[in-house]
Length: 148
Image (cartoon, rainbow, N blue to C red; front, side):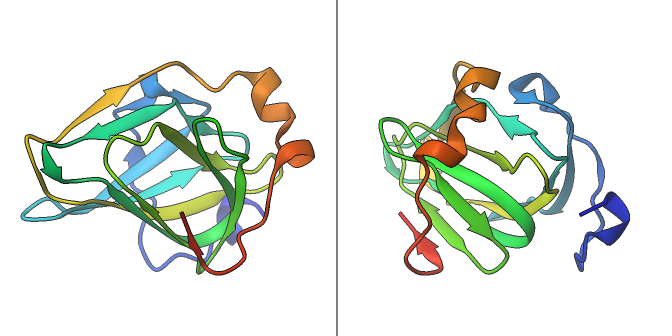
């Protein structure tokens, strides 16, 4: 899939201002910032964000709605899950995870930040090329369109 082939109803936006927490290039188009934060995130092939944790005293977490291409989601200590358009990932608070594009595909998802009390995001270490290159050997496919 080429950039011109991304079939998304939303513009990809500008280069991601959080790019220091990504390996590769991503783009961010904030769709909503009032009440519930919703961003359209587009990843170039092989792009992924660092491991991170969404903290909250109550509520909080993140929901990913995959809209185009092929990507990955992985929780700390668990096998990676391959993602496709139509997949939904519900990420509770306090779960260390990362997500990004497959090696040969652009990937687009809506990132919904679930409102929470004392919510914050902690960026952790990068997903190394060595870890990323092993994904197809250790991954699982989601059994339904909801991954968790």
